[in-house]
Amino acid sequence: MIDEEATSMEKLEKRGVINTWIDKHRSIYTAATRHAFVVSIRDGSVDLSSFRTWLGQDYLFVRGFVPFVANVLIRAGKESGETSDMEVVLGGLASLNDEIEWFKSEGAKWDVDFSTVVPQTANLEYSRFLEALMSSEVKYSVMMTAFWAIEAVYQESFAHCLEDGNKTPTELTGACHRWGNDGFKQYCSSVKNIAERCLENASGDVLAEAEDVLVRVLEHEVAFWEMSRGG
Ligand SMILES: Cc1ncc(CN)c(N)n1
Image 1 (cartoon, rainbow, N blue to C red):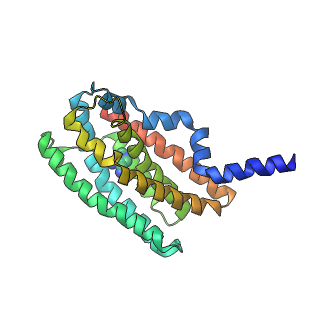
Image 2: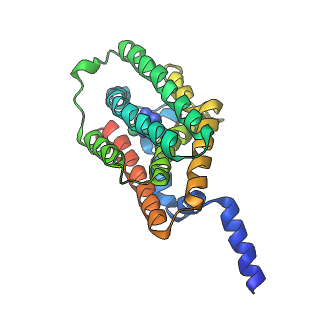
């Protein structure tokens, strides 16, 4: 009996706590990574005015996400004890620079004037949530869990639009490749490994906080997709 328990504990540890949480919160995870907006890109039925809304709102989101990632970078430098953490986060920050340029060229392509875009409620609430996560009171492991979830939702969503059988309109494949490419997948996996390593040594309270933050990221992502569809 004890041996059996030990074996199942081992399996649990090898799988990692994040995968356990994803299983536990599968319905919100699926809602975030297979949202109707994303599915409509994949099946080609996407309403282009929704895409334009998403583009404008996400441009604003990314501008707010940069200071969040910069904060993760500072914490990685101060607290991680592993030099590679900083390099992984720095890579993410560098790609956000390209991302902002990409948004600008897409804005011109889709005739979305970012200077007139007003952040909608879901966007403002998500930004406020990120602001709160930047507090020094928030543990590095909790911040890293949030950071992984934010990136992973986009990676999984847009990779789905490129999987076999997709009817993604050609003019939208640039967006899908931006987050659905293998390099971004690898980067998300590196961030996940950092979060997992930090969570291995976390107390019960911190684990509970990280799980809660993961679910809240997923809720914000769902609300963000909904907003894009005009919800
Ligand atoms: C809402 C949202 N979530 C995540 C990402 C990926 N950085 C994004 N661009 N926008």
